[in-house]
Structures are given as structure tokens and as C-alpha cells.
Image 1 (tube, rainbow, N blue to C red):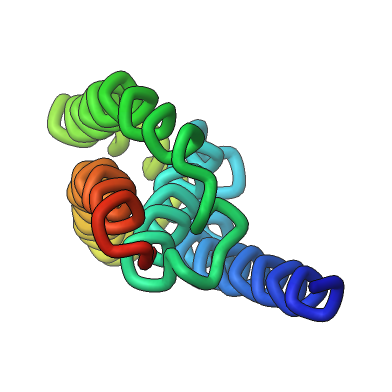
Image 2: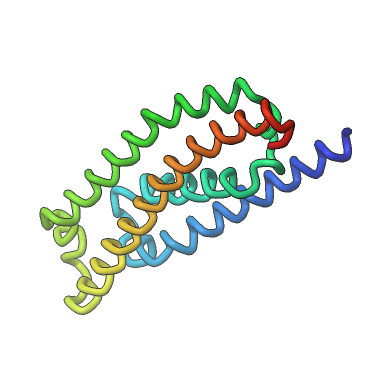
Length: 156
């Protein structure tokens, strides 16, 4: 049993490393061009949410919460405000971009760089934010399905 727990812990660290690597890859172009961008932390949070929820959707049986039924039910109810919070944050970032406030941050760059970076930020935030929201909804559904399967079939 200790060997299985050690393997789960190694797998958990591996996924946190993948999430950190993915966040760095996606945010690094913004940070290199615009180090004082005010929403880098929120962007990293969206990437972590997307990876965390997605891995639990597909690899739930290889996580610590696989057989903890009460935790899965609690996570289902926790996901309701989390989904609304993610929607609110994505809406805030879209408003930040659409109202032209982003261009105020990009003023110190050459015009072509401004256009490229603005396009990258717009698409990256929209993609990652939408992916985080969809994966959060599916994560909640997956928790309920897992509880049902465990009670009726004995599987995760």
C-alpha cells in the first residue's frame, strides 16, 4: 500500500510539473515583452485550473480522491461557485482587452509588436479561460458520475 501511495505522490508531482511548464510556456511570451502586465497571475491560475480539472476528468482513478466519495460530492458543490468565478474572471479579462486598456500597456512596444502581442494575449486568454470553464463543468459532472459508479459498480 505504501508503494501505491508513493507512486500516486510521484504522479501528482509530475502533473504539477506539467502544469507549471505549460503555464510558463503560455505566459512567457507575454512576460518577456510586457513584464509589468497586471494579469499574469490570473492567466497562470487559469492554466492551472484547466490542467487540474482536465487530468481529474481523464485520470481520476490515478489520484488521491479516487475513492473518497464525500470529497467528490463536496468538490461537486464547490465547483458551482468556481465555475461562476472563472466566468467572471474571463469576462473581466475580455473587458480589459476589448476596452482598449491593453493597448495602454503595450504603448512602449513598436506598432507591429503591439499588434502581435495583443492578438496573442487575446487568443491565449480566450482559449485558456474557455478551456478552464468547460473543464470545470465537466470535472463536476465527472465527480457525480464517479460517485454513482463507485456506489453501483464498485469502480471509479
